[in-house]
Length: 201
Image 1: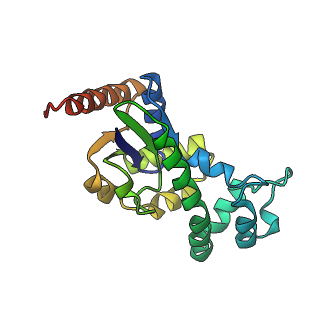
Image 2: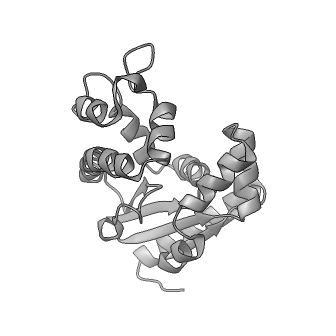
C-alpha cells in the first residue's frame, strides 16, 4: 500500500482534493478533524493543552475554543510549539492506526502542517496543493471571514509555497474552477494507478 500525504498552501483547497478522492472511493485521513478531538474535554490532550493555554480558552461547553487557541498561538511562538508538542504525537498515532486499518493500493492523509511537523518520512509520496497568494487571501476573507490583514499575516506565516512545491512528488494548482481541479485529480489518479502496475509515464 502506498501512503500518500496531501498538504500545501493555506486556503489552496486541500480539503476539496480530499473530497474528490472520497468520491472515487478512497479513504482520506483528515489530520485537522482528528486534531479537533484533542480539544474536547475528556481527551488525553485536554488537560495538557489547558495548562499551556489557560482556563480562559474554554468555550461554553467546557471544550477548548479552537479560534481562541489559534489566536493565542499565532502571536506566541513558545505556546505554539508547546501545543504542537501535545497535539502532533496524538494525530500521528491516529494516522498510524488509519494506515494500519486501510487496504487497497493507496491510502491518503490530508496533513496541512506536514512539512512543518517534519513528517515527510511518513509517506511514500507527497502531493502539494497550491494557489496564488491573491487567491488564498480572497478565500480566507470570504470563507473564514478574516480581514485582509489577518489573511495576509497567516499566508506569510506558512512555509514558502515554492519550498513546498520543491518537496512535492505531485503538484496540483487550484486557482480555477472545481471542474479544473477535478481534471487534475483524475490525471493524478491515472498516474498513480499506472505506477502501481509498474507503468512509468
